[in-house]
Length: 185
Image (cartoon, rainbow, N blue to C red):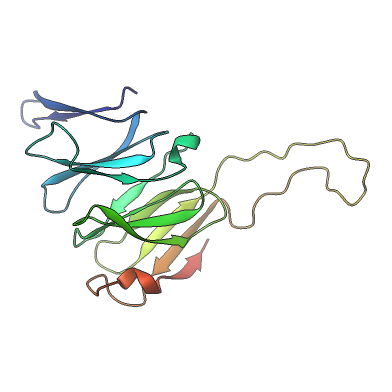
């Protein structure tokens, strides 16, 4: 919970290095498909750090995720199969897409009315899955108005899994502009 990531030799289990830089406990790590970069995200921390595996002193760049610092939820991310883009969930219900060669956000699309806490990219087929929702409780309240329900209402598309498909393959420039929802569970 101290915002660090340890790297270990898998043969001897000797500690090779410790990466510091997050405000909250690290909840996700992912190595780029080419093995050169390490991406880390943490709870209540509005950035994903990109680290060069060969020089771990400081991040190469940080990808901003506004609003993540305001939620206790783990907000996941995934890297595209060609290593060109990263997709991240967000606290406001959108999916944020980043160009990994530039280290900047290039697109966003609305996926839910609740936090998108999971993002997974299929390794072979152009499909992106999102999970959304939060623990919500129906809280009774005192109301003398007969038209007002006695409990709160959940958002219509919270707590669900959705499958998205780009209109064109990942290899196509600006593939993310034509992303469409295909299935909702």
